[in-house]
Amino acid sequence: MTEIIRRILVPIDFSEQSERAMRYAAHFAHKLGARIELLHVVEDPFLSGAWSTEVYLLNPAQVLDQLVLDARKRLSDCARRLAAEGVHTQAAVLTGPPARMIVEHASTGEFDLIVMGTHGRTGLSHVFLGSVAERVLRVAPCAVLTVKSGIATAREGEGRWVPALACEPT
Image (cartoon, rainbow, N blue to C red; front, side, top):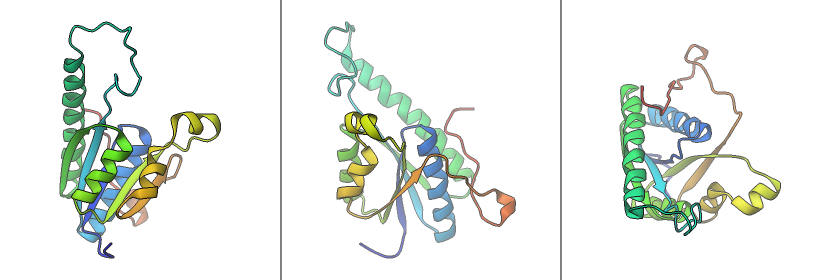
């Protein structure tokens, strides 16, 4: 692990928490001259159990392809907005189990830092749904910064640079 942060991986699930994590990463990248790679992992809805085998679809592979295509479009919009703020950004979409794919991508991409949002689930929802952030944190090959929901962010006039971003197409 290096102490110089040059490459930052930001897993994005298009939630408010991941958008907040993206803003944190953009702030660090801007200050440190680092590059950001946005990553979205599409989990196959049939393998994850989101859809049962009783659901009839004409072409299940087409569903996964459409999810990947939609993710690419949304990530492209996020990357474009970061680039407009002066942050060098790339984007990637992978398929598979999110935590495992994030860790594998971080390992092969030689990232110095992972910045990711956490939903802050507790109790039974944490037990049943688990935490992608927690699983990544345990085995990541580099430092991990988790950004909880509800954290206030600085405004431009307060002396700290935090870009105002949204990942939704305009």
